[in-house]
Amino acid sequence: MVDLLKEGMPVILPVLLIIAGEAGFLRTLKKMDGKLQVFEIGVLYSAIVLVYAIVPCFTFLAGGLTYSPLSDGRLFADQPSPRNEAPIYWYYLLFLACFALTYCASRGRPKRKSLKVSTPEGSTVWILLACYLAIRIFFVYTRFHYNIEDPESYGESYLLYKGLPLILQQMLNHLGGLALTLQLLLMAVMTFNYRKFRSIILCWIALEFAGSVLFGIGSRSMLFTLMLSFLITYHVAVKRISMRAIAVVSFLGLFLFLSLGIIRDLSTSLPDAEFSLLTSGDEFESVFANAYDLRQLKEAGETKEIFPRLYFADLMNLIPAQLSPFRKLDLAEWYVETFYPSLADKGGGLAFGVISEAIVGLGWFDVLWRGAVLGWMFAQIHKICFVGSQSFWSYGFYLWTTVLSYNTFRTSTFALLPRAFYQFAILFFVVRISSSLLVVKRASDRAMTPV
Image 1 (cartoon, rainbow, N blue to C red):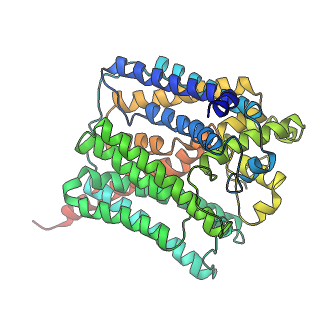
Image 2: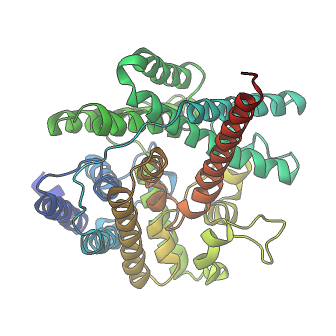
Image 3: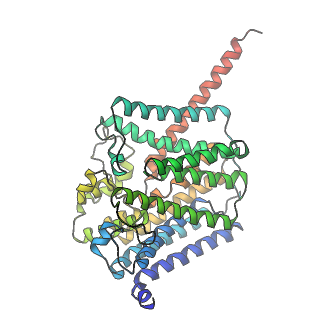
């Protein structure tokens, strides 16, 4: 054991510093406010970065500093030493440090210590529900009209609409994101009236979980988005959850997340392999492997083609492909199609990650400014939502950003910018305009009613 720890020190040291840095960050926020807001966007995001760093290190140590066939295929094939992996963990540490320092400096001390959200009008709730049902009906109609069969594997689910016209693929992609946003907001609305909708909330989450298990485990985003939306809103609007309960729920949630991912992989690619929670590959190891692999590829000079286009990739996603003057760059698609085309043909993906983004860019310098920019952006969102009018929509945007903030680490730095426009802002305007039209119609009906 002592020899293992000594040999693994190159990766253990930066991870211990990451844990110490996270503790210092939380302690600073607690001093600023007098108490720690566990579901504050900066707190939750820093915890996400912490988990993305700890889990790969833990599985590496649990495997005796080697990777098994159940691990990420790239790491299993290369079997890197702790010294080869260490730079990635130092990138993680630097990113978290820059995020935490900038967040604390930009956040300040909000005048309000907690959120007090006003519930939406009845018409808003019905419009949200109608939009959600309309999207679901559109998806069912599309699959029926184009005779699209159910995917046989998780990878094939990403190829489900590949043969459709481009404009329809774009619509389905954005509508899928809108459906996720609508679920998040509807869960928040019901949690505001927890006593009234308690049974529906529990049944909804149970059905989502049962559907994943019985009909094949696909994306886990929907299930965990619902659960996190419920927990945050319950904590804010119903009853404050104790730190002990949050710790227990967080551990169980992480265990469930890892278990579902491993079961999904075993049921598709490795049906005869034995289940191993400690040494099997997972979401966190995959993102780490992206960074490790791309570091090797960059040193070999195989990533030059996307520099400096990678700096504008997220911003260009705001423009439809038909109107873009340049060919758009999806970093995750570029990575898998360029270096793992056989996996791409099967619908597989490898995400990307902000650390990978920095590595392909300017390395350490990119890690610094990306962590700082995200710290500043999340601090501004926190200040606006705590200082400004706390309407349902301001809370909804804060909740949406908090729940989906992991994408800025898992995918790319500004991954939420195009999503905020297509999956939140458009929904906001549609609901507000529809609500205004209903008010005008009611006023007109009352004016025409004979006295």
